[in-house]
Image (cartoon, rainbow, N blue to C red; front, side, top):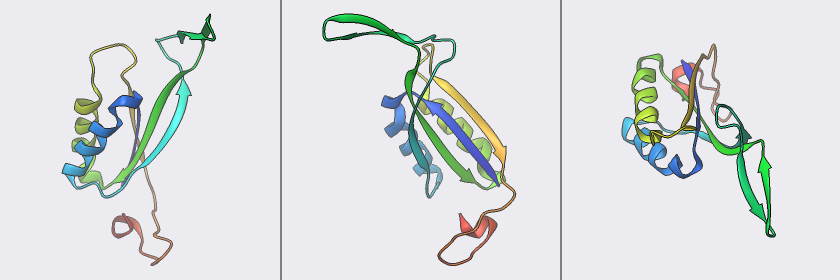
Length: 112
């Protein structure tokens, strides 16, 4: 099993969710996060005053999937979250050693 973590632009969430749903991904965790990379923050206006924020709002999508599905999941996220502009985000893939469904006690792939 693999954990796929994607940091994407907020307005791309629906497209990413739809792309993953067509692959048969049954669930995901979505978190509103802030961070910065090469974008180096952004300039905003608040009550008429301009100020610079160091953190840019993003969405973190986490999906646990079977190892056989991970390449297609990464490709689907990359294709649906891409705008071609700086700040499109990153995708990380991490090994998952165990998964347990709390309600039933199912483990590993059957717990997904």
